[in-house]
Length: 343
Image (cartoon, rainbow, N blue to C red):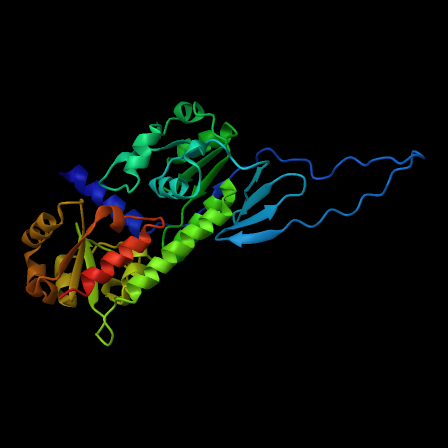
């Protein structure tokens, strides 16, 4: 039971967001200047100046179009990854990037995905992952066996493994910012740029944002914004989290954030009860929402006496939505609009 509790808190913390760091390594720098040609007299023909590389910022990366090559990715930490062509054998070692690569590129370019991709408790790509049939572990030898030309990892990937991959000169990018709707947009666009699937990534972002706007159009007009708290295992989801963004986009107020609490701090049930929220939100395994609400109220009698508890306004969000750090965030907002405004 303690192990399952730690696992749930870990994933809720991931949904809430983790600190930022983006990591890449130098790999395969192409020559930037062609050899000069000669005219009939044997004199060198002056070369026209090469056009300046086109640059754009995506989150904490600057992406350059490299003359005579393809693209360079420079993180705010100064680390630089140079790719000579779009990767053809991508290994995704995090569930968030599993979702993104399945959405934006041909599946024959995906060498392997994380083991969590097949877990319906958290994944929304179980069918795709099972059809692919190639799941990666965190062992260097197993990753290298897929002959990847790009590995996508996350902040919770082993620091030792990341160092080993760098030492083996495997091209690697580490995504660490999962704190907001804006960060999700950046992650989708970054993976799209890394794979040469910029247009597909923009379509995914546009679809996500359009879906969120359609959900927001269903927010009751003129109603007071519900005061919301997510509380489980002694932890609340505060400001600077994807949950905070989902509450705001759904037309609610996230009380821990309003009380100056960021990320996922520990708070007692008695403190939450003193806030007297209109709505309580919990995560639940798909299909077990009703049972999860009953168990939550039995375990937290102090919260059963709050405005939310008395009115039966405890909302169970399926964990694949509650923990999402990909474009499925739109479905999370949809579920929040429906849940926190229901009467």
